[in-house]
Image (cartoon, rainbow, N blue to C red):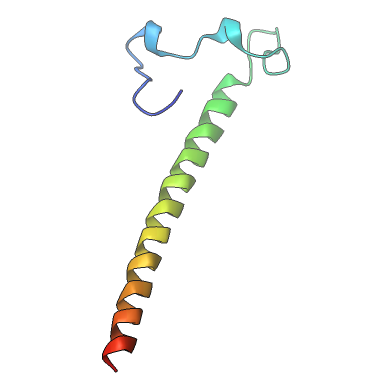
Length: 71
């Protein structure tokens, strides 16, 4: 689920396993939803970190341009 939409204490704000695609549900009492959820969290974290790095790089580039202009 997107950020802010998951609540471990509220079933209404958790993944609805009945809506999972057949290739994710094994039918043997265990499915891949936990793995998919974990991978999703890793991807979201990597996206956040990438955005932070891009912002830092943009700031450094602006500072370098300013320094070059002053020279």
